[in-house]
Image (cartoon, rainbow, N blue to C red; front, top):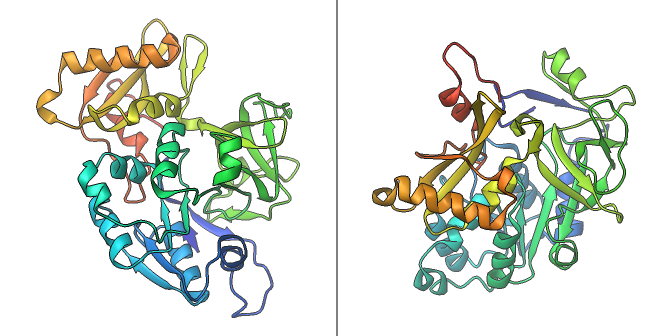
Length: 356
């Protein structure tokens, strides 16, 4: 039984629907890795994430079940990951967007000093990848990136390779398991290009261990299930994510998606890491606040904060831009996911328990 990563609360045990396949037949992901991504006996796979998270464990075991070799990092370090790719002639690897950003910010001589030409498939997931970040990774690694969207719950699953992504920049692909639906808060299905909650039908079932209320909240009356994410589909059925519903900032009655602001700031040279949250505002309910881990701690201060806000105003709608910036470490799980609830606790009004 896998557990969720716990970014929005305590990790939840997930009881999947049993397939009925005989023991030793392998998991669906094992066969998908071989058929769609070329995993086999000549595969050398790099797992930069800890094996107590579902995706690193599942993909590492899938590599072994397909006859390949797995190289497992105890802790991610951008330069060390590049050295391992070079030293072991890595053919396949799995990353999260934060790891891409940290590799892209390495000094040019370090990047040039590692041979990445052996890479055949670079998989990424866990969070939407900024378009500019992915474009730079494709320029560097080549057209070998494949993105997937799914959850530890093991139901709906979308995938997109590099050529398809270049024609649909920002998409996480079309479903290869289940059918995707976008619904408003009343459960009405929305048409193309309208943002709502992402639901999957015909994708199997699951339950949360000893938590009937959470299980019920993840399903609707039609038997569809959701991971709690927001997004939209285009006219061709490609899915684009906006973020998690629990991360949504509501300011003056307008929905603001932190991911878009984080994407804008991620590659700024003054930013080592960034998370965006909504903090209380007496007039608008919430205001946008950026928590920035500075690339140079000595440069953190009002001048840099003003520079970052101006940078956002030059690249985003003004209502989306941070009204304030603080300089502090961004809490993340070893998987790379932001622990946004920890930040919300820090900025909650006295006597209020922050939920996120």
